[in-house]
Length: 379
Ligand SMILES: Nc1ncnc2c1ncn2[C@@H]1O[C@H](COP(=O)(O)OP(=O)(O)OP(=O)(O)O)[C@@H](O)[C@H]1O
Ligand SMILES: [Mg+2]
Image (cartoon, rainbow, N blue to C red; front, side, top):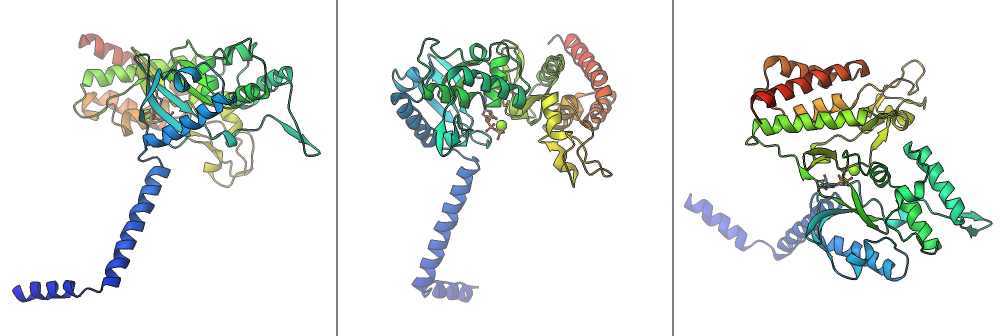
């Protein structure tokens, strides 16, 4: 044994320097590459990145390019201070928590500025900008077409955070045009008082501050009563979404996309929350398909018709099916030990049944069980 160790030692001692250097360089490059991807995929995030976004935003504000009454507290008075960046997300370019006059808010921006559709069009390589009346019409049409949102007065509903008297410069109009392309911003503003989503508090450029929603606690120690209460609150939220003439679908269902404001459950990631008519334009519009995935809009799915090879079938799932599958079962909000066999069976059936005819039945059965459970446990 001793001899073996000696030999190893001797070998290491004579390990060529060049090889050592190569291994060292290889290790460093590997760490840098890993760090790059950890940052790129937002598995970790750096507050420095948020500072970079805000420096750019404030630069634009001082040049008169970013508008909205969140700009002053961020860029001049210092009333907004960054708390922490949010990791583990990849949809939006920036998401971070901040403190604003003693309240925690979340500030978000959807895309890099260059990724928004430009306001101008070209004619013989001349840039043509719309006038303000044309912009209002462009926004109304774009809301209808892209998000299924019909508003009598789109401007005052969507943009209450701008000085109404301000001159309608190209920069201001560009700002309005960019925000009107952000589905989350539009959905939140058109449902400001619905208690289904956090309220938007203010905007600056393409950044907006929203109410902070507490995450749903899911770990083994979480009290069973609390988990049943949160499950009930989710069902109540789904009923509100279903009550619209054009029911609203959540197409990216994850536990982290829900949160609590007071005793209301809200959806906090609204990038892919759309009225059914808009969902069906992606899933069932008769487009060509080779496989079922060609007819999916994230979690909202229909099937590729094998005969016609087109996405011409109805949706095969709904909000409740996704909640039963991805939240109650997969995320473990409802552990099997929490429920009597009959309710467990109901949730398992609900998790595989996307038939629209059964949604109301499962919702009613589950809700009455949760209500009864909470009543008996005096929670
Ligand atoms: N209003 C809010 N209150 C509390 N936390 C929030 C709020 N909005 C977002 N978050 C947190 O920040 C995370 C990222 O936000 P969000 O989901 O909007 O970003 P995203 O880039 O669209 O994410 P994804 O890649 O999941 O689509 C959320 O999962 C949640 O943890
Ligand atoms: Mg998202």
